[in-house]
Length: 229
Picture (cartoon, rainbow, N blue to C red):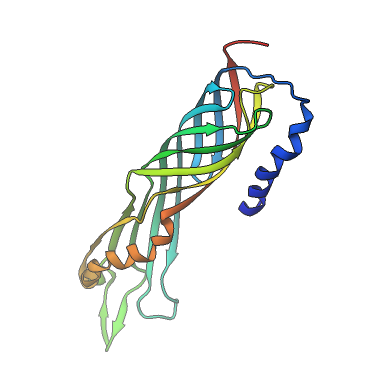
């Protein structure tokens, strides 16, 4: 489902469902365990009810992805091959506000402790010939780097799912973003690629769009109730 479509679903669900309960309430305070998956990785959360309209969530998210890519075309004299790793790791503390007492629609604000990191290692895919002189892969050198983000990232979003209303098991969905700012780039180069070591600021500027990181997740919650109706 596209993010925009999910956004409208989350907006319209409260309007469609408010009439289903005829003003009755089944609020059961307690603690909920949430397992979810999304753009922040696979996550686990603990949700604590504060009132019928307020709840506090803390959690952790993790995912690792490894890949390869090449720069330029195969016909170019110098072609670099890159191995990269995307490490998603974050911890969150979020406050949920349910403006409609009889529905699961919520407004969410809080912060992530952001340990997301991208590392990469690039080196030539072949020797390079220039004016009848052959430069080996080792002579050309390597470029190694990483991208780190500021640790504290404020979050704002909307969601659906109230773990403390009615059934113990609930579908949970979130759409929002956290402001992780632009990454800091560290580069290490060797050989003939050494002059490229000052390109960190250029890469940082190209990665500025990443400062608003979209968060879309879906999961299930199970509630451990303090009281029963």
